[in-house]
Image 1: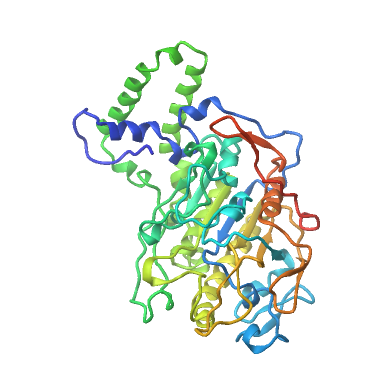
Image 2 (image 1 turned 90 degrees about the vertical axis):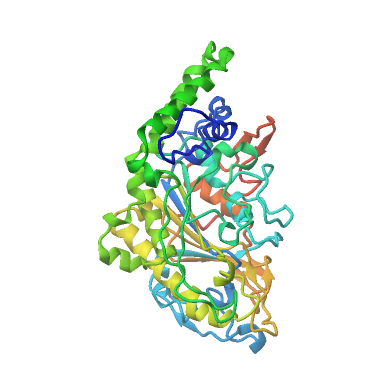
Length: 470
């Protein structure tokens, strides 16, 4: 990770600083090993979406309490919520999502996401690979996610990162976890996204740890870049000098044709560091107060607004992750107190930020070119447990899509009478990821090579979901 921080000091550098300069993964896949690996997106493949925004509802949102209610099921299955009519004839969703209900004619609801990966991380839904073992730490052998592939293929403007993760990497709020998903993985860490940072504030202590959520307040910000205007010039110049000294050690490479490409990439890295486009996207002070209020002045409303600004600038892939911040809330992992957590916290949040984003994108003429995806890593168990919670259930879940060329006003798939299993048109994470690749103009059957030169399919055998794309 390249960092430009601190006060002006002497010109001495230690090994740790050299490693920071050498690993440019924070800024869009610009490390030296990655410079020799480049492939082009097929120019003949239609590109319906310029960008994707993924809102990851970490923990596993309860599909039967949100978008697939079963009011005729036994009381221990159907839960406490009632369905309401939506703008899409015949579709009914949760009573606590009234604003989303008004927009369902613009959305495509998949009710039959199914897999067996029982782990609290977005790896399956971001990579398409659902055959791994549950883990709480991302591994360098993990498959790369969509954002990493976008960077590998050099999608998007050259002066912007190809992928950004907001408001922090999954697991950051739990101090010790780094959940798999938004990484370059086997392609290399140079294809990691830009990870923003955050400093959430909480207005109160929870009455019940983990199961009485407190809304985090704050905004995502860029590591290092937020302090560029006040940085010490001699420190920045010294880092440039360090790069020059590192270059001297690569005599053989200097004599080869690839050196020029390395030098250009290094210059590009500094361009990204100082890019006004990157900094401007994170500057929410440029937004009118009414827009800030529409999204919500909390960490997730602010993150979603930054996501809109990033895709407006041209970033191909942005992920926003609802995070677990220690005892201040368990996101959607509701083994206890499921209904009050949904009613009082999670559903009002989603019912504000999602319509705000869709209407904002549409008003700016960006919805047709931006594919918005809302989902979690799994669903919840049909039967309510003894603590008024629902447990893990990867066998069935949902994905809500809008814009980017997907079929509006469509419901894909049906489930059984308890929303436990798909009855028709099951969709795997690989199928969903293949669909997103197709909309971005990337061949979902494309194979790329990992760091050891071994080819693998980017969508892991998935096929675009027929009927979902317009």
